[in-house]
Amino acid sequence: MKRAQQKGLLEVVVHDLRPFGIGDHKKVDDYQFGGGAGMVMMPEPLANCIEKLQTERTYDEIIFLTPDGERLGQKRVNRLSLKKNLLLICGHYKGIDERIREQYVTLEISIGDFVLSGGELPAAVLVDSIGRLLPGVLNDETSALFDSFQDDILSPPVYTRPSDFRGQKVPEILLSGNFPKIEEWRNEQALERTKARRPDLLSGDES
Image 1 (cartoon, helix red, strand yellow):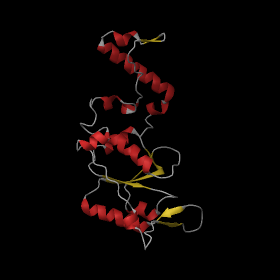
Image 2 (image 1 turned 120 degrees about the vertical axis):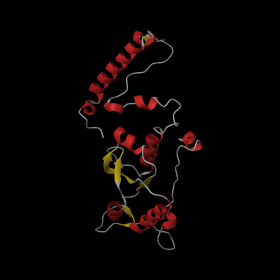
Image 3 (image 1 turned 90 degrees about the vertical axis):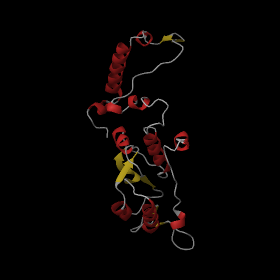
Image 4 (image 1 turned 180 degrees about the vertical axis):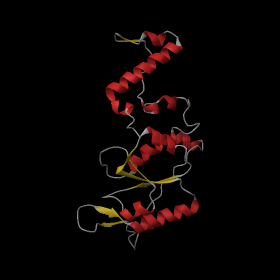
């Protein structure tokens, strides 16, 4: 991602919410109505920040990273890589005020069925997964086309030198130079691996 930014292929800007905070202490969170543990990010600082950023550019999606969002999958990443500007909201504490989700957020994404301290790590995951698909980011642009989850299938096993590692040998087909046969072998291996490890992908459940 660093090289992508240096090449001007990707721009990542982190916006501090604190300057939009309320009062002398620039407060950005408060106790939740109805009681209960955990602080909630207040709507006003978030709304002011979002609206200021919207005066500077148009966002194709305003994305909130949350455990109860849509499970992130390669198909969604592919679609997002075609967008121009994305605004990511990283929640913290107990979450963000529901009114921000209703009024501003256009897409909610989860990176898995677990809870983190905040949305910063999921945002980094999303940026990396999208950024590597941008033309010119990878040295070999065809590499991303054969990653796991493209075409709803896992990648086949891969090998490198030496051809014999402590008695474990590379499959002969990969040393044959017969590229049509190699491709056929890889497709078979990818399908078998997917059947064994992620049969849900073959049913089209991955988003």
